[in-house]
Image (cartoon, rainbow, N blue to C red):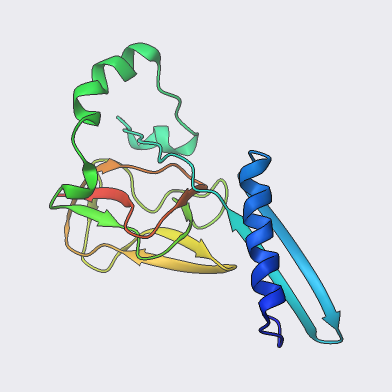
Length: 163
């Protein structure tokens, strides 16, 4: 973060957000150098729609899943309910990017049907280049995973459901 905390920086960030919207971009990252050991790094991200993925078998989590049109039509009644209102919903404590595994290609922390213990890491949210482990708030079984790997999430967005 810059040692400068000026109105010019705020105006600069607002201009970046306007550029993002005007040019239909999803992300914009800029680094401003003010001098030796003084810079401002800004990353502006437009939240995309949250993707809901239901996985039938744990092995299927190794690759991103694409829903077939017939499967999407069958899941339509489930999509009508708000997962954030579910009593077992685990919601995002911050804005960032959700990751289902510790690194690309690694085994996911949890899969649908997996039993978790309270405090067990269920996924990671990267925010400002910091990896934040998200713990299970209670013990139970993972019923749904509501985000896909690398998906941007907002504060309060439902991530998964544990019953």
